[in-house]
Image (tube, rainbow, N blue to C red):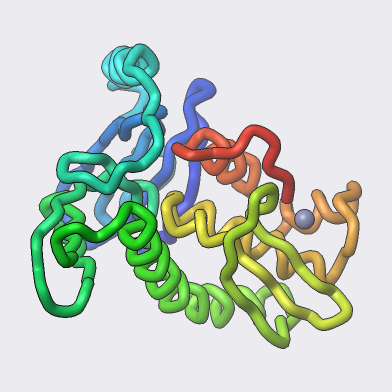
Length: 242
Ligand SMILES: [Zn+2]
């Protein structure tokens, strides 16, 4: 049986499991906050992953400690070598002079290539990256809605992406419209899915009460681990609410 991606908590450590077409298990501790991610072949069970994580606990803790002692990222300058995030993974920015159209290419090698005219301002580079993030989210969200709307039994009439300062998502219940924060493009996919499910569940329950928590437990049993992952991921705002 092929299993889905999910979260697991092992000895207090939240582990993100990514199942794909590979032969071996790959465990990584990602900067800057030491999130643990395990890529495994599709048939591998959660128990197998748990054992693999336990056998590497001391190594994981050492990595996390190393990251903790590193200085925090400062404001973005959009210069080559700077670290930027996409779907929870860190990429190195490489600026390449180009006189044509501005564009961004993401490479599997871990590079974010930004092709811009020489002298482009930081603000315009930021705009370019944000519109790229927006495009990526726009491609991901429809498949998540298609997956979750039938499961939850509610349908959003409309959805959109915007920059929000204090919220990861919001739901206008009367208009059945869902908003998702652009920042989610930088977070692991498990976080985007969590916020989308959370906002869809507001179509069943307006408030963050016990009933709402029960719905989350029912539809997304690992939601608390996903929420912690969201808050620990880089660029997290101090008082995000949901
Ligand atoms: Zn909410």
